[in-house]
Length: 292
Image 1 (cartoon, one colour):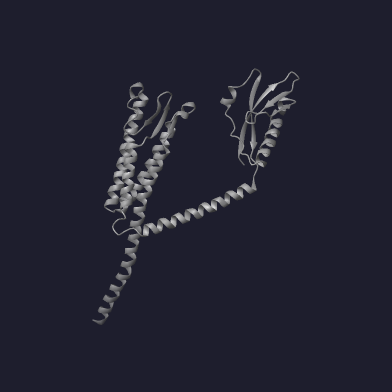
Image 2: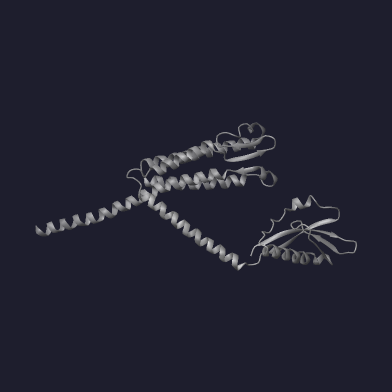
């Protein structure tokens, strides 16, 4: 069961009791006799409110952040967390499982349609998917931003592999290093895309397979490193990674895999046809030897 931490604001009254208010649920307050009873008193109120919202089919609010609540604190007030465990909802779980089953069926239908489409590819045109995937990867690398920085008063500042940081490079050695890393990564993405096009064009399954694995590996490594290097905290709100760029790379790899899969199937068909032919020829040779 998941646990959600709600923030409560507490203030000691002149009577010695503690007044508890709930930033996530406006207009609701309660009191606790002692400081030790604050958690239990607050937990009871939050659970009752969540049950009320659930009964009315209203989604519970997203818990506020401590920084947001702390800004509005008055003299004598302090905050504390109250951990609320989500209760198991059998009905919701069953609905979720049904949804998963429908997703599986939809995925199966899509897979069947893709297989039908693949099986109807004209002879000699099966490598166009891989070539198209490589071209898409090259265009994606050259023209779409890796990340976007939201600058106050200046709008969005888009950073690409081969441009974007050059205007800021004079201000920081760290930015210069980041520019070199971006340029090197861009070149590597282009090289791997070129390998997809070359291996698809010559219809070499082994080179195509290794180029697909190379693209997947570098895509994962690059974006893991990118996420690690992105600043945390408040600055993170102003920097957004281009998920559309990631999606296009995945699509380009998927197109290359289509070509690889088709080439594999055709190889299997050829082998299945050659084996019976070989056994027939061998049988005829044996019969000729016997007759001699």
